[in-house]
Length: 184
Image (cartoon, rainbow, N blue to C red; front, side, top):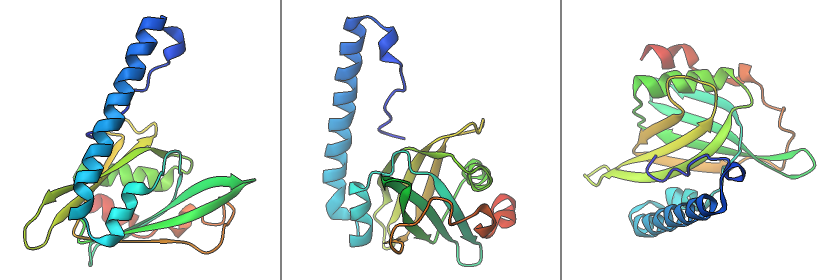
């Protein structure tokens, strides 16, 4: 992650340290905002909207990996806005490339319900004839190898699912391609 906010319990520190920490957070937020605004004109319309999404604390419900087409779909829950109502977001990446560590983390997240997003960012890696984008997602997880999912892709689409649903209306058995994700 290029724009990671330190996870520090500031209450346990003196006032001067808390103030310095708050200044650091402000500098990181400003750099992240400036990066997104410079990147926005280079992104295709479905992807530029993701810059505005706040997935913080959104749990991962389902992972679908289709090896033959290199297509990955993540179902994230946003909410609750009202009592126990969550809004499903389907993020679909096409022509996906992932490192072995990313694939292992994704397989782990698919099996461990309850892990949620700490932060996320979009970036552009290549402006060749077919641009390559990256979506980095930092997770609140106990997975020991890495906490950052880095998905490289060429095309992207998203959709908000049907009207709000309860968080548990999709189950881990809805995951697809988990065996293939750890083998490839």
